[in-house]
Image 1: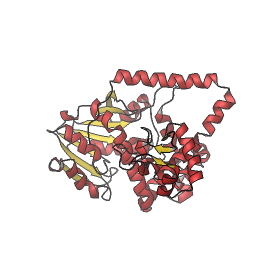
Image 2: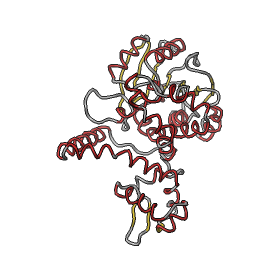
Image 3: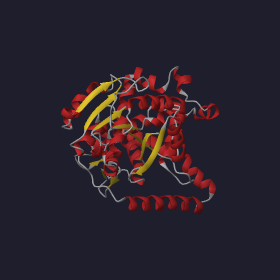
Image 4: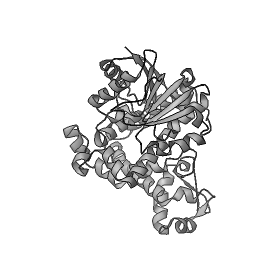
Length: 362
């Protein structure tokens, strides 16, 4: 993966502030019922994007612009219905249509291509899938009970479901990989992983992140740890990254035990999947594997202690509905870590919504 130059953090924060301020200003200038109606219908745009991804519209336009008739034939759609779908997407900057009636990609549409450097196609396919929509229709139940809805609807937890239903599970796995790709550049640009001799990536999937970390830290070694079925293809992924000779692969459950003796234990988007009790179990397992000099690195969407918009506030409800986990504020992470015998050393912001929380044994 090519290293994309990241914008300086002060600029990122200014842009975030301006975007948030414009959203607030828009809602104050528009009558309340109109602003609310815009939010209510926002879900329709999500499903329109899902339809575009499912039809493969972006992939059909990679070779260049196409007329409506050409595009309809390429994706197997009725031409007028396709025009109506594209009309909505174009109004939001997703695709474009020139004076000759030819549709083409835009920078926002390009991530819908399966082969794009940063592809969100599988993310769209998962979030627009039948099971995901069905779960979210029961958000009221989740709010009433404080529990994920999967056990009631499917007879099993979300992670058990995607493990058993491999068609859904594979879409979910690819979606999580694509999200990791989206935030990887800012993560690598914000933290010096080369200071550690051995980096243990807990729940690291097929090793996409660890491979990139080791590429940028040639003196470091890695240990990739995840469930056996998850790491089955990891050796090939690590070989593609050119780091197979510096990275071991181990399998198991982080509820039972993890490889000991690492200098850094990295958990990216793991903690938010679980409630405080289950996270306490994971942290105690990590504690037994770490030394006094080891560092715990949690990569999470740390919620701000204010009322401004933040992606983590959406994902927090996703966790409530599907996994029973939650997003947390910095103070909540500090308390969570302290209860398990850790001290939060610092929080390192990135140019993405992710923050790196560095902790040590107390």
